[in-house]
Length: 252
Ligand code: PEP
Image (tube, rainbow, N blue to C red; front, side):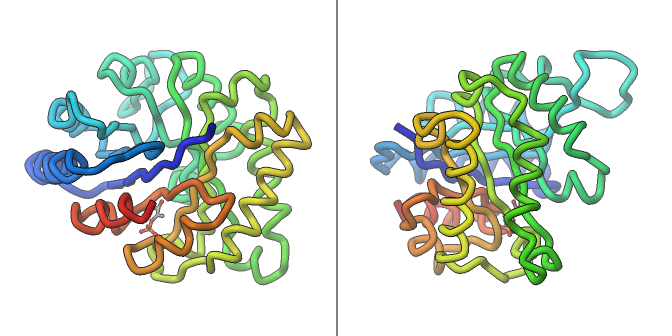
């Protein structure tokens, strides 16, 4: 059965003290909750991973990385490998965030390599994709999403999908305060599940968690998360504050 996931992407925010404080607050609040089928993930910047892993140790809060390099090791100044992440005890990495695609030139081909490297190191991948506003306006959003998923993931064997989480993040809704309506999110998520079923099997499609990302906040999360094919959220701004983040977890 697929899991519900609330994953907070802290991006390039929070210094070490602030990261520990936020992690402690999230842990303290999650302790009192009955999570059932819901996973709670926080994603600090690389330099703060070790301390956040320590702060969340023994709790239900999981820690993931925001990115990684595709190579095993070597002369890649400033980069982090999959093995470095697993050596910290991490089990999950976000790949393909639209900010990585847009500002750091991550193409579908690079992302396919990153996915392979992550899976080879037993890391689960939260794979992000989504259309820009012009694509939505020109009714090209389904094509864009299909091609991003196809190019990044459809080379995988069906069994690899146990370690894939999908995150549909319309770029026009990220950090803009503009949210896809629950109906728009459901429409796209159902489409995604169908293309996965067509390529693999209904079982693979039914078992993959599909998160929505884009200005999710406590005031809109219940409605979005209640949609049949929406299995949770990848959260930016609202994840930087424990109270808001926990309110999102409680929407399930
Ligand atoms: C994100 O960057 O993944 C995101 C969804 O950000 P926000 O929630 O701030 O729109």
